[in-house]
Length: 119
View 1 (tube, rainbow, N blue to C red):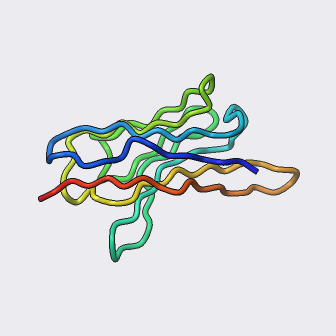
View 2: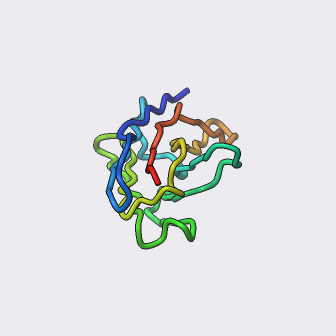
């Protein structure tokens, strides 16, 4: 079992920045991948950014050039630096981890943190 706790969400004006954090209750050194997802009201959850164990990153087109995902293994924390925020970025942002446990890959989720960008 692993617990993921997000923080850093809030209300920000258009064009502003936020840094989300996701603290893990276990060492993230061996996690296969970690990512940030978001879900806006009435929409399906979508991938925002992903980072693998090896440090490779992948971004949704809407995040490229504005968001940066990073992991600090020493602090067991995943980050999402967001800049140039727009009203369409309003959503609940959740942290995800894929972990190999025994012979099975399990996915864990945090509870989410709300990001609101008023129009």
